[in-house]
Length: 436
Image (cartoon, rainbow, N blue to C red; front, side, top):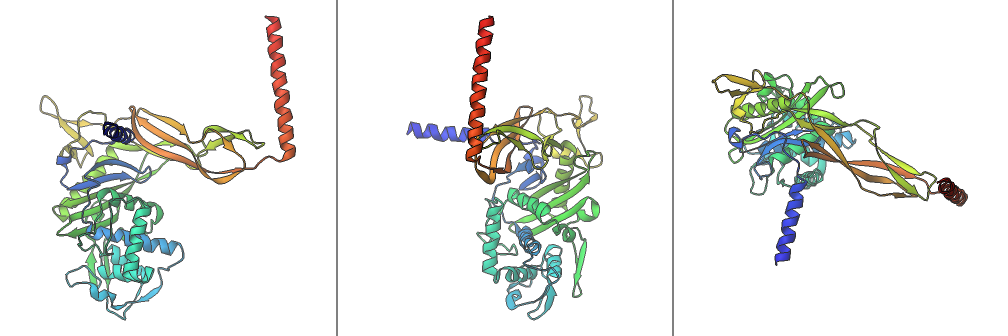
């Protein structure tokens, strides 16, 4: 029993040892939301979070997954946004008090209009109609939603309907919704052409977008609001802002807040978290494009060494907050975009973001050598990024490896070459000894 307890403790220690340090330590009690997460979709790093893996009712944030699937199918050529659909009786499942476009069976409508109704109006009848078209039926579409969630690593999520209506086993988390938002902005960015619209009218039904930050902040262009009595007021928010970095002239961030008290409060809290993250974190180029990472010896090939190179640049998110104390979100000034703290004389002092960061990389090779023939995608190395000696990010270097096996003639020539090299080294060593 003691051995089992020891092994469990060791496993827990190892898991904690590879956990990435939070970039911003924000006092949970200073954020008026039950759960929240800030994510940088370019680096994939969670900047700060609280209760981010607690399973909660997502409400209409669910429709982000519906949109993601529909837009993926459009990109794959399985669906056309200009296709005209005939509405089926499935829309009769929508209750009178649910958000809807008021579609009627037999009515004709385009996929493009349904996407606008889904994202801007949060229409439940649009969700059902699109789901039926994509998968042939709503149950099949729900299965697809859960498959996509698993593929994205959304381990806190289970969908039971496309609309987000409250059901006992329909849940997600702030972290999972942030990961879904990351997939949307990187894989299906056309979503943002809908989510940045401030209003939409269909068949004389006018709807003003419930993301009130669209009119308050020109850098905000999505993603989705949600509300039910069980969920509270939820908001998945994203913005794209210019930087002074020529390597990455623009930077996007994602914030998800769940369980706030009102429309105004979810906007206020999400916007403050967003601005705080922009002010006190930045992206840095960790690996340049085509940068050589390491070399691996190769056997059974004329190629002696294989160069491991990055195919694309890799950015990491670093913290610009140098103080040891946790951040009080209430101390963040939305006008100066800086934290304000009281000094001993009672005056307010602005905390300026750091200008330089202490970061270093540690490269861990996955292979000791490569044996020809090889023609496959391989994970060759893992890069660990540390800031102030704390692990903040890890990412794999994967590459398409193509190494041809040496033929018989080439092997013989290589053998003779190695033999001559051996005798040459022995002769040089003997000469060196006699001179001594």
